[in-house]
Length: 388
Image 1 (spheres, rainbow, N blue to C red):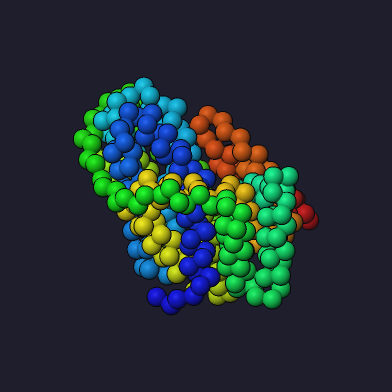
Image 2: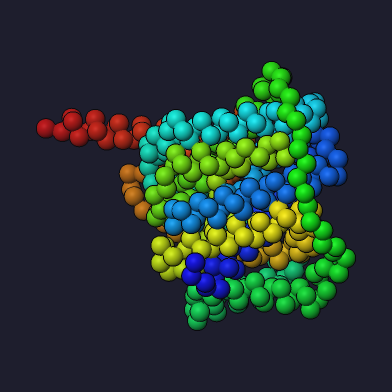
């Protein structure tokens, strides 16, 4: 694998953003299921190892930056539902949900569905998913204007002088500032290897309808669908069937509740800053996989490590890393006149973050955008037919 510092840094930022933004949800979900300390650590071990192996394997095989992740919306769902079930029933529901995801890939229906999504709508959905990170970037200003101002200046200078190493500089400068001010609390960390703990699954109808099916729907609509859209928006043509099949990894008995294609963190490894040539960006995802393996091996220790990073630093780095992707996605979404209205509504609905009937905003935005797109296409065809 060719080595380049931007690849390594992009992979590290993707993992850092993924862990700092939602690892607490994993711990809360495991606790809600009645898991003890060893089982909570097992969940973190399983998720890290599963994501690491799949990121490395899929990226090497397909030669494109394929990132997998745990389902963050799924974790939020589990926090509110697992308290009504035993841990064994929860594990059984995870097994069923994983099998359903794998079946979606094998059957090919998900691939057929994605082929009917116009490129402008996919780009609009991607922009809507990522917009929050661009907005959050400037919410840091009242809390830490010095950090944001310095990182923004570094970003602008880097884009002008060393485009490929922009995020390397931003991350380095941010770490130096936070370290110099004593904001990185790393002295109390104790490195300890994690180990998996097997939990025998139990199956029940209540857990099927209360956990498995909602988790499956949330993972497919709010994670896998944007994950495929992000790959296509960056010029990749993934084998949808294979990718969805592989993300249904059966690590459920150890706490692997859901593996899916990454959306937000994947975009960090696909921008021009990683490599000007889209065919040479895949090593960034391999590096992310390597970091995921480390996080899995050390479980709770690495979770505590990433928790020690100041929120302002993580928010700033993530926002700056995704600015280019947000801009290019908006440009792709709105440049076609015939699809502009549908794309705009897709973008706005997705960015709103609404959740209705257990379905995330990204899916609602895409569904409504598709309906408007098809209606406009129908009207245009009728107008053409009516012309003498």
